[in-house]
Amino acid sequence: MGMHQRIPQQFEASVERRVWFDREHADQFLDWIEDTGQRFLGMDVAQKQDDGNWVLLTDSLDLARQTDNFEAVRMGRVFLADYDGDGRMFEPVWQERPR
Image: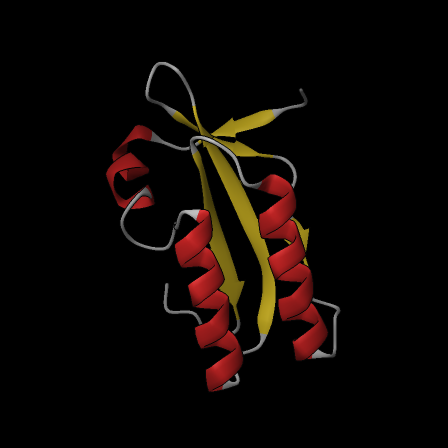
C-alpha cells in the first residue's frame, strides 16, 4: 500500500478539528476557497487505522503549478471523490493559509 508517514501523537487531536475535514466538509471548504478567490494549491489525505492512529497517505494532490484556480478547485473535487472512504480525512491547502 505504499509508505505512510505517521502523524505525531501530539497533533492527533487537532487533526480532526482544525484543518482536516471529512469529504462533505472538505467539499464545502472548496466552495469557500472558490467563492473568496483563494488560490487552491492541493490536498492531503489521512486514513484512520484500526488502532485509532492516523497515517498520512502518500497520495496527495499538488496543484502549486496550476495557474487556473477554477480548474484547480475542479481537480480538488475529483480528488475528493476518488479518495473518499471510511476513516478518511482531507486537508485542503490554499495560499495565505494561516499556520
